[in-house]
Length: 294
Image 1 (cartoon, one colour):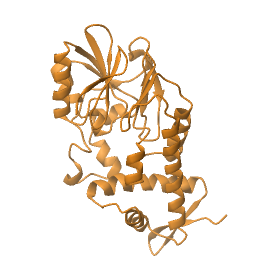
Image 2 (cartoon, one colour; image 1 turned 90 degrees about the vertical axis):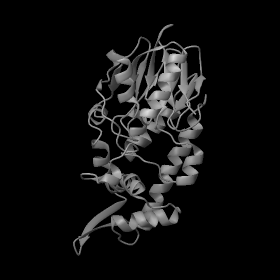
Image 3 (tube, one colour; image 1 turned 30 degrees about the horizontal axis):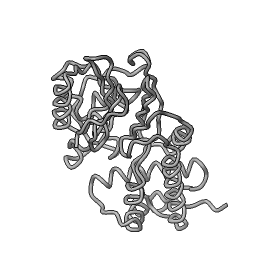
Image 4 (tube, helix red, strand yellow; image 1 turned 60 degrees about the vertical axis):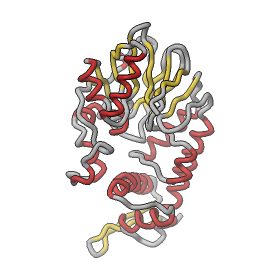
């Protein structure tokens, strides 16, 4: 773990729970794409930098989930590097209490205020094209989170953040976290058409051809949506829908899974309602979801 994997002479990734991009800007300076999940990840990255006599100039965050910005605070304090985050993700990076608050839908209890869901704050500036090293380009990848962004390097390595999950992860857990289903599907359709020297997703193997995995992710989203519409043939509350999904997929409920999968299921329900496949009504002071018959 935390092994430095070369892709080209310029572009690398660090093998970690969420793969971290590293790009050489010249003989001495490098930048990172994300920073890992905590202070310990930051220390391990710092060791890699020191071992190669590299100076860290900047961290470009793809989005503000804690496993992607957790090393920011340590590395910024140690190296003085700049940190950039896209759109709304900048606010979440500067104020990480926003992530568990969004997931829970209110002030999060102590069970949710930990490094897995809430990184240390870091002084992030807004990511724009003007902030990028020469030859880099931004790739908007909304859907998994608010304003998630990928990067294409001058040697055509594409870092895709969390816009895809591995086949193994999808087969095991069935439902992976996402914020906006419609945007996510549009992003995956865009990714399917991309060409690159190498694609580096954060949670899947680096590959030269990404379209098959993108399609597998699309199929899994549509399968989950179909399952929800089937469950809701009888009017159900959100809590019952969530319980049915956990039981049918043989998942284990914990507080973390409740907010992560629960937030995702709410996003599915919103999308299915907006696309006129579900309807809602109130009965006995309960919000019920029901499939709309064709």
